[in-house]
Image (cartoon, rainbow, N blue to C red; front, top):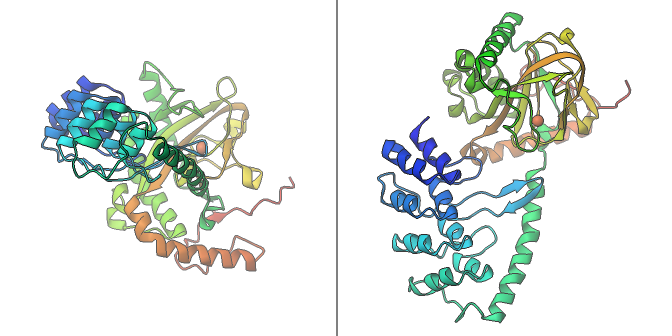
Length: 414
Ligand SMILES: [Fe+2]
């Protein structure tokens, strides 16, 4: 593994020795997690890993001393507001030695998190006396603070601010779950892989699983576990699968949703702005895991490809709650849906069903740069949705490929 990734992973697991080893192996300051915004320094500060914090601050890796995290959202609620700097996290945890280190390296104590709190305000709210004293006295340029932790009036004001911030965070969480108009409809991309390609992938998968001591895993996704194997662990086909999906599926997603795509860079998923947040094979069987209950994925778009014959099993498919319908596809077809739409794996009642599942996200830079384009696209879709009964005719959107099947919004009758 890339020592930079290893460093952040070790820090996230509170493995200080592993983190130090990763720095010695050339891990620099580690890699920033895309979904959370956390760096190795954030984790090390949160866990109070003084030696690792010291090594990171003294490393050649140009550590981001004031990097800020994103909102952490679970089950539709913000469980930790974003904007946390390493100093905020060390303060919350009451890690005075770490706070002292950060301040001596000139961490910015005036930065506020998404709730509007400085580290010193968090220290007061959380009654972290040693940290509060450090923040108040070690940094002469720190903003004016009440005389002591017990300044009741100021504390009450902070508590009121905290209550308001929690209300605001609920709105942010709700906003995160909104599905943009252009992603409301699920659809199928037919024949992404030929039958021969499906068999090639499936055989390699089964071969790899037979050689794994642990076989299929069931604990990779904490809340809604599937019986799965990461694509990266099927070494024989991993590169082919990624390149194939990048060229055949990403290009179509980009055309459908107005996201940029470069043919020349088709094999570099990252450079298109689309990337795999997760890519894994799932097995459903009547004897084991037959289906998966309703949930949302953490992705912007998810898709799955059926690897075996549809006649190998009965039941199955992807159930989409908004449509009250289970979508079934043929071998080699690719079913695409918004990760934010609640969906589940319709249980099978006979046989075995093998699928490849992809969680796809957009790079932040792309989302930011695309806001105007997406707004225009949303507007076009909304206009169309109110003026036509059928959702299937998208042919006058120049960028939409004709081989995309758009499912009818459900008027569930069969
Ligand atoms: Fe899912």
